[in-house]
Length: 278
Image (cartoon, rainbow, N blue to C red; front, side, top):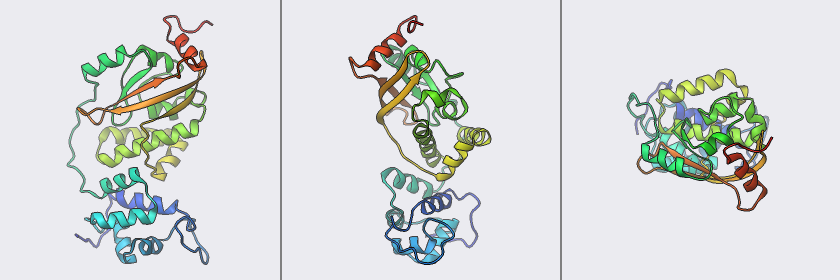
């Protein structure tokens, strides 16, 4: 283990650990909250005790002065903070040495994937590592018709006023979008595209700034979305997110309605060449 005496300026691991312990109430961690507490979450010494390490060591870890924590130590800290599988993986990524900075090529969906998306009879789109929309079929374009632009799912959620009515549970959609973006940040902390996007969203959205500061990380590859389309009305759509083996940074997202359901009927009208009758 390499230890440094000075705190690190680039300390993504420390930021994550502080955010996680600040949100873990003592009673949830099995810690007796005795005396006056300045913050609602756990103290450093309490996390250290739960993880079975010294307070000095855990403090160095948060400050970025412990540069190479062992996998066993990270697992102990993860257990102390009650982290789940996605968060544990994110923690390990933040603790790893940062990858060398490199200029990424502009993202674009591979031709075969574009052909697949175009052939699907239901809304489908391809998103990149920071949820940029790289390709979408006409059904997806019709689904997102109320938005000014279909360019980035996170930007659309926070900066397009249509999102508030489109997502019947906007708060859940916002949390999911930020959690996915946080995962991308853990995989490549020097991604220029990510830095630009986060800067734009932080500048223009208070809600984004609050959620980004929480450092929540959850990946959800399937589920149901309750949407309200300005023309078709309420839609209950199941979605599946598939990661590509050829390019793990790209994901295929497909929406479907239960056959014979009101949502299926509305979706079929929306996907008709002329759209639903007005």
